[in-house]
Length: 159
Image 1 (cartoon, rainbow, N blue to C red):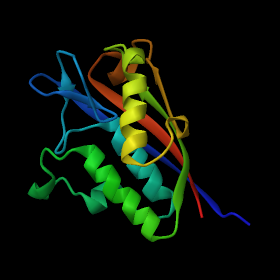
Image 2: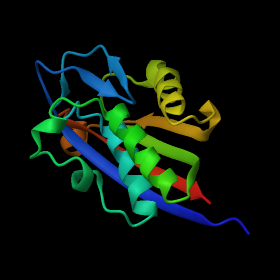
Image 3: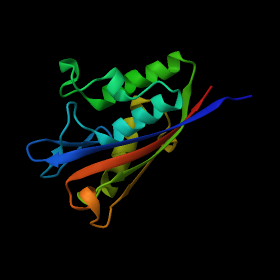
Image 4: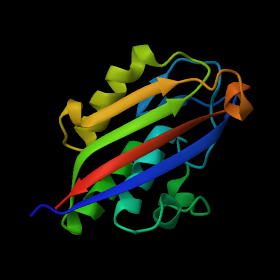
């Protein structure tokens, strides 16, 4: 019988000037970018936390602490690949990922295919195993006021 585990992840970062906007490993043209110790890719961070959470392995802060200068400016997709190797070493593989990015601007629909391709390639998955949706918060809360961008992810692991 196939064993399965499900994990969920969430991340949010503040929008600031003079930073690139990286989501799903893709740089998106925008006047603001996400502030963080690494590249602050909230989508990739949420996926990593979901992967780790499915196996009760903690969160990305445990493996890539923001206090460690090693990870300053790190490419989150490279970190994602390390997390993938960790779950594979535990005997698990990704069945599928489903995620949502919450942002008022920029409009993300034109970038979803590129994000899906980048993440599926990094994880050696088929593009149809990586679901990415985008929505707004209808001008409500910090995300709605364009103070930040957040992401939610659910990952199914199989063994």
